[in-house]
Image (tube, rainbow over all chains, first blue to last red; front, side, top):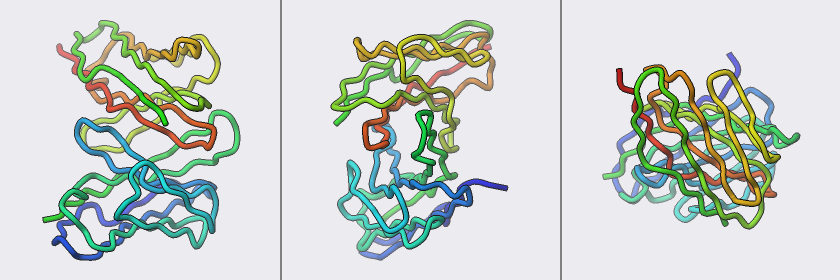
Length: 114
Length: 109
């Protein structure tokens, strides 16, 4: 079934640990995005990639890094997790071509940093 | 950047109509999206407006006025399954989306 998968589904992490959230899409979409969603703040863009080999910073990039080695995968790394990074993380992808370009979201990763 | 405002919560009765307003201030505008998000799930696409006017999709309609920086999502013939958060999002010229905090709609029997 086409779509976006994320792993893990949930994770509890000790502060200071390194963590990589995985995201894979099989729709051959050009663009991919990472958001965090916190109560009362909505979805905020962390990093994005318009095409394989390129990445850009979103609204809240500090403490996170990404890479886009190929079209399908877009991992998000927390180099040294802090409690303020406790959130639900959503990966999304889109064609980026055409006017009605819609972002499709993965199921999310619930991360708790203690 | 974008500044997007929408009400936090709304309650309505099954079978009724609810209108969720969204106002935005933007440094670049390339379309407005509405997403639906049920609790514990991912957002799913509902509607898209880039030109002024009304777009209708079954029980859901979305309106846009670019000059006023205003949109609304109209949900008709409300059903219990419509209880969810509704997210207004504005796309900029770089195809990035900025989201409002979301409006939680509760449908009561």
